[in-house]
Image (cartoon, rainbow over all chains, first blue to last red; front, side, top):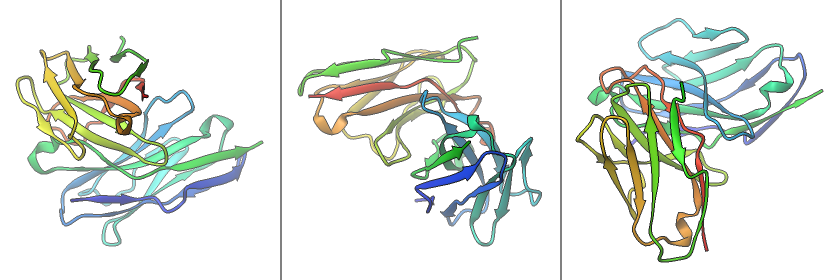
Length: 117
Length: 115
């Protein structure tokens, strides 16, 4: 079974600065997908960014980018120019490509991101 | 476009009572999922349905049953609620079991308390 580990229960950053959230995972599979989800106090689960394991290029979405190190099984999220609206729980998630990915996501325990004004 | 709709949003039950959580999606997605989220934990998969007519157990299925009523609807039933089932429940859907890179879209969750 796959596991996802987020070693930082809480992070704090000043508004407009850059912060990196770490995620490591354990799998014996070679083909899979990785996601970062944001959960604000409203409880919604919002997709931030996704990465296909077969792609070497790191995914980017505006101020959000990842550092994907497949050999190290590491998938960190970098948030540039942090904004107050970025304050939330952030979850790293893994999805197998076996079986077409019909099974669900495996989540880490989350990192609570605080933005200091 | 409502996306994934869960009802109810909040519910309090007594131990031993039964309840069905409802979920419906209007995105014509094939796959649907039920997760639970406990404090200090990420979401954990309870059951999923890869396509209409199929259901499979996830990581934590004990104490739950599911029904994929049609392509749109996927319900979760607690036959005899226990305090350990106090949690926030999320329903999600994704486009197709063949497209693993497609994200799952989540409902707003149901906060369930078992006394």
